[in-house]
Length: 212
Image 1 (cartoon, rainbow, N blue to C red):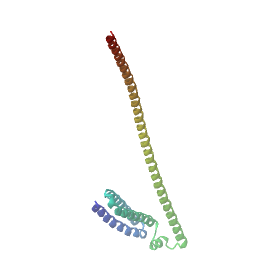
Image 2 (image 1 turned 90 degrees about the horizontal axis):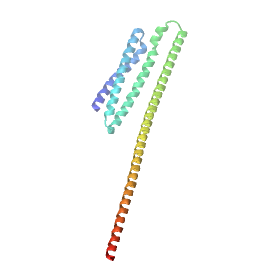
Image 3 (image 1 turned 30 degrees about the vertical axis):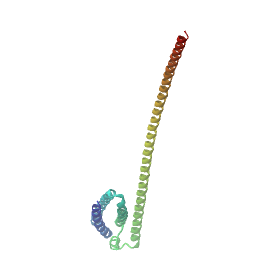
């Protein structure tokens, strides 16, 4: 099981190293060449996410006593993945000095200031998008907790309903038992009375016979 994890781990390390190098090249590219590089990196990042998912599945299959070390490594890889994605977003709106000079030409500082302002605005937009994504994830997690809590409450209510039915059936059986005991007691009392009546009569006959 751990051998599979380590295999995925090696693939992840090779892939992320290649992605890191490619991300550094993005600000130096223009036009179609930049678009192709961006598309290639997006595909590699998706492959890296799939590797993380496979590694996480492997960790879940590892015995609890040995799982701690692998869980720690998974946290590190997830942090690395987050950093790569953030660097990739920044690289898409960044320009190297060489490319910036090519774009600006001889327009002077005003054009450069406009480019810097545009880049800052895009970076701010990306930051807001990331915050919205995190808020959405927190809301989704809160909703999941609410759903699970509702399910637990429903199960508790169902259990209480079943318990109440059991108690009611037990009470009914107890009342039936009391009724049967009362009936048996009355029958037994009647039998005892009949028995004592016959015994007294027999004694009377016996005494009367001897007196004569």
